[in-house]
Length: 76
View 1 (cartoon, rainbow, N blue to C red):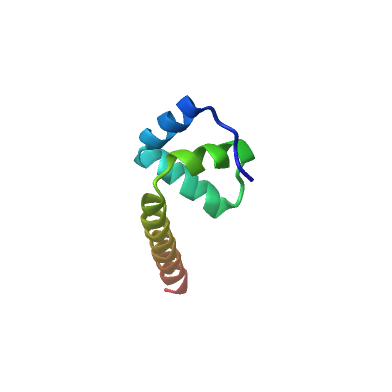
View 2 (cartoon, rainbow, N blue to C red):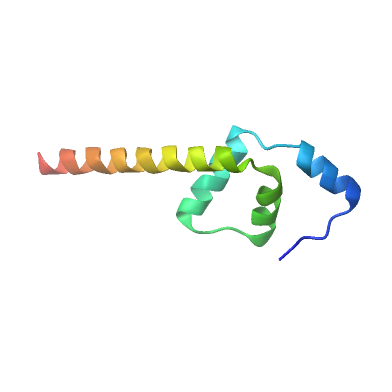
C-alpha cells in the first residue's frame, strides 16, 4: 500500500528524520504488537531503518537480560 503525498511533503519527509525517542517509541510499540495504521505510515517515512534495527536488537537484549535477572531472583 502506498501513501499519496504531495511533492512538497515527500521532500520534507525525506529530509526530516525522527529522533531517538520516536525510534524507541516505535520499537517498543512493535514489541507490544499494537500500532495504528497512521502511526505506522508516519514512522515508515520518518524513521531511519538502521536506527530501528539497532534499537530493536538492543531492546531485545535488554528484555532477555531482565528476564534472566528475574528468573535468578526467583530461583534463589
